[in-house]
Image (cartoon, rainbow, N blue to C red; front, top):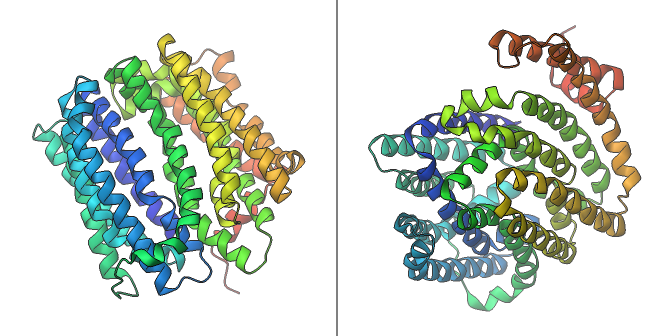
Length: 468
């Protein structure tokens, strides 16, 4: 519950940030930060290399293993900071934008600070202590929002987001140091690093590829098109990622600790995974249908008129995200069940497919990119399904059973759209949208009851019980 509470507060903060900063910063400034952020995000995955997952899932986490993990973390972060600092000017020249290099230099400081709190933050997650983690997350995001808005208003442009990110990192480190139950100091030791490296190479490699999969998009689009195109695609994605922030991130935070605990106790990990798929698709699919239909209103309300070019992208992105929802938590499942090699193989295949597709399609424009992502996500689902069927006995029939009721719920939620077309009502009218939203909510709850969806039982269990 604390994970969801902190996640919703974090989402509110992010929505305020997006709405305000979209009006304080230009598309070019946001695109500039997006390119630098994408490059740094790849470095971030090198930085972690699966160490956080290792510190959470390892059954026998000794002091030696902690010291070894800490050494690996410091070695990677110092090396990456040096590489990024030395190449920042060249990267800025490559994109003909010196500000990208300045942002990367600020990010270097971020990297050097991260190992300071890695043990404490992982310990909090391993203990499933999401109350303390919620305090850390909400407070750091509040600092990020405050600094970003203040500096953007003061004319710092894209640099305002970089300084805000650095402030949030410093805040996070201070908070985890204060709230961690065990404040024991561990010295990084090279001789214990070999106990950590096998896991790090497999999961870290997969994380790097997954990051390239996600962050390669703005890098490629920024080079083949423009910074403005990156920002427009980012805003189209941001509208859909509201669902990710509202729901999926809260669930993701608990999955590696949860699946690892179930595996240690020899309980049914597969059944739990399929139940999670059933629940998230029941929420995601109707939401995506609604969002795709009201894309124009969503963009104008959240971002303003300067982002109207993102409207046409949203329906395609909704379809792609809907497919991706089914295999959203495959990485956490494979990591927790000891299938790191299979995770790495999956990441290699899907990353290559996505990046090659982007390179081939990008010259044809943003709409072509959005369309191609549907095929990319469908291919990823096929690949991940193969490995789940082979190693965890989760076959296509299991997914069909798991998602069938969610599909029925989605189809029922489409029905309120029919009158809008029959009577040619204005989908941009606030009154029409309000009525449509009300009907969708009613139809959704009705569909849960009619299909006897597992989500209904979960929702009812959260309601306060009447005292006898």
